[in-house]
Image (cartoon, rainbow over all chains, first blue to last red; front, side, top):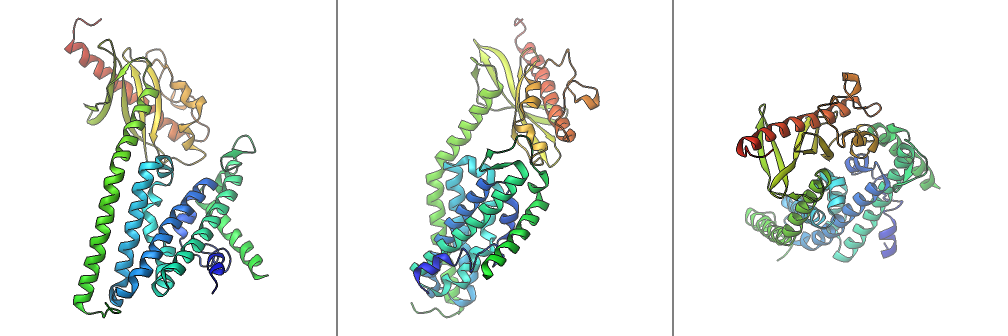
Length: 193
Length: 198
């Protein structure tokens, strides 16, 4: 697989949200606005990239039977590092995403990539895989966020194009499922061509 | 070190090493971020206090607590020329989606100066408006609870609730009303301590 396709596969062929359908908890919960989706995507990408690199380096010396606990410790460490850094330097973003930052630890994408890719590839390839899947995740979350924010609050990235409220249901949980479902249909139809 | 076998010694060694390195990384990050985090928290607190307390007063950022009707309230006092001008009281009530925490500034004469939402879990687009909807929050500015009733109109008071968010509006109003009670208790307290004032 070429280096370029390692990055691009995250967008379409192995899109984490619409094709792999992993990491649904943050996908549904934080995408109330485009900005939240983007920030959550970038935070996940940070963890994905670093944990992929480290896991690809340590995987040859970790005994098979304990590789999952080993990986989880690495992932949890990066998530906590991210959490502390965000709290210190971007407190506003941290407050907005709050609980969902620590929950990146249990995001299936991160452990999924560690298991499926980083554990059996080199550091360079794993880094590209982390970037690719991370970008795919970021774009998907931002897309859901844009649709929900546009329908739910009549705004995109905080820029309002109608006065007053939108369709409130789209800001709440049912809207998350609806938008995700329709985008998934649309995505798979386009991807098949 | 070859592709390690899964025997007990290897597993224990490997996990210990991984945990040890991770702990070191975390300790280093904590040491670096500790100070900025504390500074941000302090800054946020000062900003919130300045927002709800009268201007040109000296704000004491030292948190104090008062027990009233079985609830413990934390508050901050502000003074001018050594005389207390008001208090910022942290007041928590049950909102629609969870606890609603307000910081309420009450002047020494018992009128509300301003209130600010510190944290909430209200419905986005409905109750969550209590944070920025000025037509709602503006009603509490300089509200005098002696001449008007601190309750939503549905309950016979003088506060217009946020549309479709009566429960949140009620919780908000109750939090302010509780803070006013705390301020009254504090006022009694300061009088006892310092009888020649006023």
